[in-house]
Image (tube, rainbow, N blue to C red):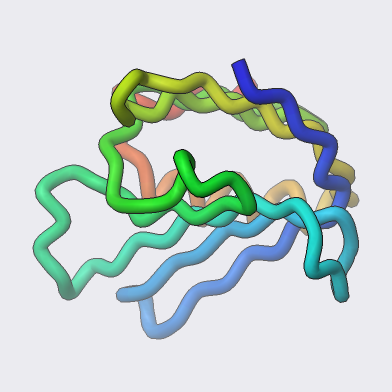
Length: 115
């Protein structure tokens, strides 16, 4: 399992067709990060674009399972070999609610569990 503390979370949406969630050390950081993107308009065959400071965690992948709770996001990425990523983050109530909303758009309900 990859375990990251990436305290800054950013959520973006454009026109209901493009969604992005990113986690980083801080707003201006060029260091460790983890990003998920999904586009409604492009055929994705059930995959999300994942990008990270770790080369092995970059590309288009299926997500087998994802769990979100206050301050913690965990997901199982169907890479070769499969990898579980756990991200500890900080978010106020507004940021956390926005994160929940966008993740619900990006991930099917049978994949995403929100506590």
